[in-house]
Length: 537
Image (cartoon, rainbow, N blue to C red; front, side, top):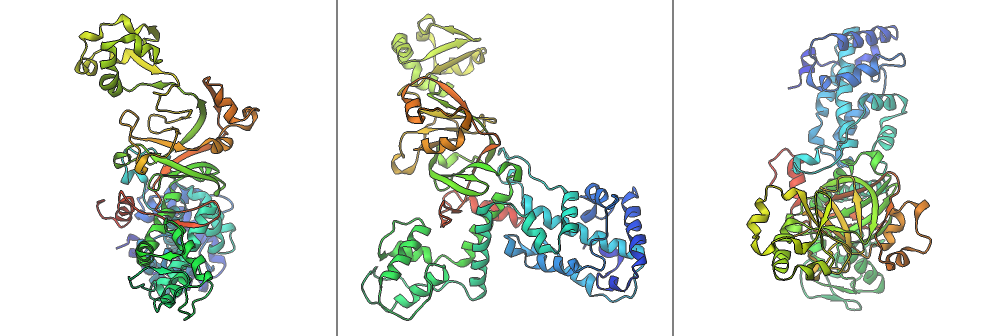
């Protein structure tokens, strides 16, 4: 099953019997094996360069010989679920069986193979802990997400400097407050699963504050399991303390807070603990996709819940509403740099809008279109709209025109400009578009077919711009006054600021409150299938 086992079930435990004088010769044997051009077993070969860099340095030491790390690693792999990973992905039993053998004193060559066996499996786990188990492009081939990977040499150096593996994990995992809170809640949910899962609540008539009902003790127990009630008592009275916990539960599950337990809340509370664990673990996986160096300043858009949060060092500073353009076909999963913000941006009109909406107007009266603010450029030079024979053109002509790329139609800020009062300039702007949306759309669904399918409208986003714009050029008169001047101006963004778009069906609010949402487009199902190696649905 694992090629290294061909060298025998060697033990870390029996290494304790080796004389200290063998440590140096074992290290030299490790170096010899790594310098041999012969291909090594996959668990070592795939990170051979990083492993060779560590063991070839003057500061190198054997990491597993006469150390407690061996047992700690197998325990960590077996309990990988506490890190939001899947224990079945890490063959801890291979290392356990190797460690259980008692074959006597090991030669330096045997010690070297044990060292490499443990090191290879350790780096596999370290990679998944920081960079994620799967790449986002496995799920979304067209996604633009910076490739996240680990520096294996750095991981081994940090391991050598750590007192134990717990210390290594604490410093190695994503250094993000949201990640830590999710991890804490995940472990809480896992303890509930070990104790049999959530208490089931029987459906029935709505429960109202002040009334007495035999179902209320079960409700108290369920809210206690969720950490929303300090204790569960057999009291059947719907008192004020229970009403407050009910309102907290409604907020957690995205329901209107009230002092009434209705069918929607019962349904949310009865969702199995395994599904809640899946949501949290998937949220942690998506955080791992983002390289640490991109996570200090981040505008994160949760496309599944029409929300954004602004994060600084993983702490939520601001939050609000953001709507995916045509969400049923908006599969954006992106991380890219925010370079600037433009007030009263000019829209480069899409050819679809040109042909379907403007062409009839141009054929009727080009001057009316020009008076609305539209202007045409050909090879960079402006062309009067009434100078072209629009009456002779058709939508098919525009679509198939061989010199179409020479033309570009623009619309400055106006009531017809869909970009609103401001828009973001992004490094990969062809893959993502962020713009001002005047108000939440009716039915919470926004769709403008003439904007990119990777576009997102941000509602009431002026406050967030205070954290986006570089402070040294921030307008002294304030944003509202600056916008009221109606001129087009671009302000650079803070350095290192990222825009990240992904789906999260569980997230952390500004107050540190964990919220659970829905999975309307089966994004969690896709990720769970990828993590388990099954074809995506």
